[in-house]
Image 1 (tube, rainbow, N blue to C red):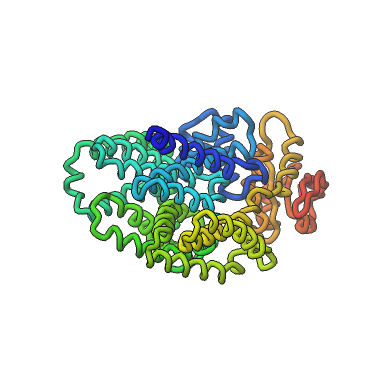
Image 2: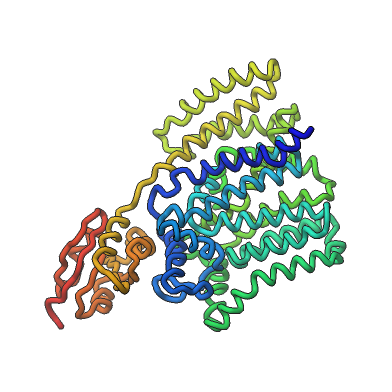
Amino acid sequence: MRSSRWLDRFGVPAMLAGASGLLFFGNLGRGSLQDWDEATYAEIAREIGVFHDWIHLHWNYLPWFNKAPLYIWLTAPLYTFGVNAFWARAVSALAGVGVILLSYAIGKRLYGRPVGVGSAIVLGSCYQFIAAGRFGTSDMLLTLFLYAGLYAYLRTDKGPSWWYAVGIFAGLAIMTKGPAGLVGPAAIGVTLLVDRRFLSALRTRHLWGGLAAALAIALPWHIASYVQYGPAFFNQYLGNMVVGRVGQSIEGHTGNALTYVAYLRNQFFPWAYVVPLALLVFARDRLRARDGSWVIVVFPAMVFALYTLVQTKLVWYILPIYPALAILVAALLLRAVKGDVLALAAVGLGAVAAVVSVPHAVTPDSPVLVVAFAGVATLLLAHSWAVKGAPGRAAVGVVVAFFLATVAIRASDLYTAGDLPVVSIAQTARAAVSGKPVGLVLFIADPEQVMDFDVSHSLLFYSHRPVQLTVGAAAFEQTVGCRVQDIVLPVKDVPSVPPRYQFSAVRKKPPLIHGAVVPVAGC
């Protein structure tokens, strides 16, 4: 009994933490930071060290108040160990480990240890989840605080003081990604209505204490920013970055009502194919439950519906749904192992759909089926021997092994990425100046190719120099005027440099080139 309790409390979480640590931290610094968001967050954290201002953030050496600051605040101290991609991503990777552990804790609380472990395994084999934990933006940290809040809510039946934790994590979620942090408390509110416990919860003083804790965490920075910037703060922070994305697609990230269905199929492959029946099995088993467990369905449903309505579509917006879906899938697999007919049928149908769709989820020339089935054959023999005549368990084991092998092959690209050409170009530009940062111009001749060549965010981070994006020859002349200017541009745009300037190359790394322009006429 004591060993089982130790395993529950320390052993399994330690093993999951170690395995997920390898998953997220392995080769984490390999591959340069990506434009735009990842390099943006990394640079804002770096500029905290430049301006020594933790409240009023800066990007490109100008005030920046687009997003809530918590991810940036947590990243900035890590630059003590090095200003590089590893430390820019470390908070996200650590949050990924935390979400794996929370999926185990929530799955265990709702269904028992086997589902808890299964939830962690399913989640750890989700391509988009792995990618997000290795990407230096706030989405994984937001997911961590949202699920910490859900876990605290599921504990409120053990003591109302858990409402304080719900409030604390809600405040931290808001400080991570602004209004997006409200979806967790909203899901809890809807679940309380479903459970017919909403009014009784409102009569709990601890709930109001949790609300006070959330406000105490979230309000000070928002108030300080408003005092500093006035209405411009909310116009940008809420207007452009929230309301603007709801009503129209930003930066070409458009889609339709089925966009996130396609994202889910591709990014939660191959588990996505059993999700509909996992929801059906959950509803059958928990139809009359009043224990708060419906939050595990209400929460992802709200996230999915909310971002389906939002006009700007981005794959990482629905990251918070994956842990909940992993728990539901793990519960379905356990039902199937126990011989539940509906669960077995669901797993079987999901396996068939996944096999049929493999060519759509990986590159056509990938040997995924050959390698996956080779691994499955070995596991099948071992599993069949172990269960000795339990064909249902063996079948489920085969499906799970096939799914895991498929994901492992697909995710291998996350660990082998190299640096983009902009890194060496930026390092050359950084070495060209000393002392106070001197401005750098990124010139793109064709407005139609801005999305292809706008590396201004990573150029800024790696060069440690302010970068001004200039599009078109007329804008270039207006920006540069009659001064000698360091510039970076696509190699193909060198002939498009206005004739009044002489361009001298310093470093060429296709498709980019770094050099200087000197005015030779008109000055």
